[in-house]
Amino acid sequence: MSETATQYTERQTAVLDAALALLVDGGEKALTTAAIAKAAGCSKESLYKWFGDRDGLLAAIVTRQASKVRTPTAPARGFTEEDLHNALVAFAHNLLQVICGDVSIALNRLAISQASKGDPSLGKQLLRRGRGHIGAQTTILLRQAEAAGFLKFDSAEAAYQVLYGLVLQDIQLRVLLGDSLRPEEQNLKQLAEAAVRHFQKLYQPN
Amino acid sequence: MSETATQYTERQTAVLDAALALLVDGGEKALTTAAIAKAAGCSKESLYKWFGDRDGLLAAIVTRQASKVRTPTAPARGFTEEDLHNALVAFAHNLLQVICGDVSIALNRLAISQASKGDPSLGKQLLRRGRGHIGAQTTILLRQAEAAGFLKFDSAEAAYQVLYGLVLQDIQLRVLLGDSLRPEEQNLKQLAEAAVRHFQKLYQPN
DNA sequence: AGATAACAGAACCGTACCGTACGGTACTAG
DNA sequence: CTAGTACCGTACGGTACGGTTCTGTTATCT
Image (cartoon, rainbow over all chains, first blue to last red; front, side, top):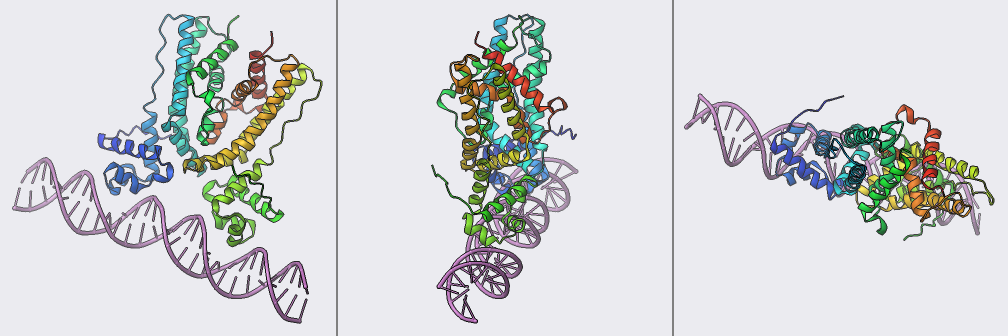
């Protein structure tokens, strides 16, 4: 596994942000090297000097964005059952907002498109740095909740998987396919609360 | 909405099948008009005569495949709670198998790629004829189960959404991104049973 | 048998885009 | 003042592909 610990200069990250903006509105077809150079106010030659080739630039975009994932607020040491509920709802709400956001949609579409061309590296990056990271943090929260006696399960990872499914349902795939949320789904906070309610019912201790 | 009731000749459906096979192994980049013509043993000119342009051909591939969706076995008139459980598990298992299959992955990737280029029509088709259809059938089953007193919920559609999320979790997105299932996820039957168990616990009447 | 339509095969055209090369410019160091 | 560095802007080569056109062949109909 290539540990791309490469740190980019301020100038280069600005280029990556410009490229991401270009990707978000316009899709992948708008993301040509010429367009990136123009939007970023640099020359194509510099792009190739900095990022190797087009795929390298795409990978840099993904890793840069994935490095921005906000880890869920660390749970307080001693916390009540209501704290747990609120933390889970906040997690679910945040997850829904991220997934329905333009940036997430554009990046996931890009990664899937690359996977379709036989290169799963972008997808792996996205899963590892995005979903994997946020999942690990939340799994810790679940374990603490179990230790506090608020939840009961065999595997924290499996429980997290269930929570994830309850929250997202088929929403992520639908937005990726270009579908728009139904009116009753517009209220993401409400969706998050319903999902967490179901989750707590499934894993209540008694 | 264009009601593409166009019926293709046997020859043309054979071309669509060949194109689908090409898409399944090789991804979208392998799906050039020249390659399709070669694989199907026809000329490019015929392709354009039959399907208009490349996008028309892609749409024809999707609609043809979507027309093959097997509606879940109609539930028996008088059925027991065990029948319900078995029907739900069969549904979940079948769903997982379809979603993890090469054809589903290739078509969903194709539709997402098209959506990324600003054309959501393929995605709409996929949702309407694929997920929408199977969902409607299953929702009917859920309603009958409620009438029989085996389940309790406010909205059958919402309950179906929950079942869908419990079954798929993040599996579909992961396979689309090129990730492979973890060893403990290989047993799809087991996943289906766990999901249905959770579902029934959530919506048990008492 | 002759006419007509359908089709395969191949050549061709225009376009889009990746990657590279080159000339010109601003800035810094000695 | 000169040399070096980093960069922009542009132009170009090579290639891939969508779509069109042409020619020859096969099949069907009268």
